[in-house]
Image (cartoon, rainbow, N blue to C red; front, side, top):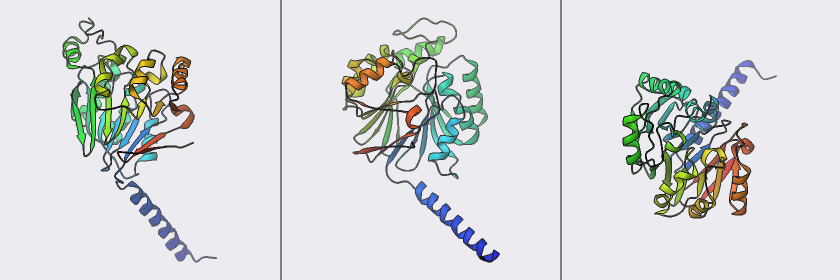
Length: 300
């Protein structure tokens, strides 16, 4: 029988090893980590930059994003440097509320067009209450963190300037988009690290793709695409896929009554021999890149 004092020493030593392992695991490894979180029917993408900073694109429909963050961040890391809200639908917005209350958020990136919904007002109140600075961006704007750049591809300022002034007053479309059309006002984000590119188009529909894909392809194709609108049949066209030259399509989806992902989209991807991974089948999907090569890990 191990004496009690020795048992305490062994237990303390084991705990120390675990903490040391977690600390070493959490150190920046010079690689980009993109995690498509399994949050059910919604979007939440956690990103750890090569220098160790953290970003989050959307928060999903509930608090499941917190569990995803706990799986991929060190337990003592309570800071997220940047959060993005692509648009104000609840399956992208609601999970940001607990993130803002539980983490020290550096700043929030939002569309230049405000939303009039109650859930959006609540998020704005949470950001203001926690003194989180806000940046409102449109196409042509970008953020750079070390060697990683996040470019806003849509919506353009011609849309956001007009709709920002008349949101909630006049719903006249500008370039085919109205202030109430939240999906088509999604921030479309291109993340670039060396030769690796990931495109996150929120819930934008196929009517928007022609407005931004030339800019996306100006410097080459896209390695990883977050499939628009959880695989909705109105999310993209075959020509769009041909233009992107994809290596992987990720569908962030859960149990739903909308028919997502649509058979038409799955068939389109299959016919073009594009690899598809789904969060409802794989759980969290992690992409790791050194700026040249990239690999995929899942937790199932």
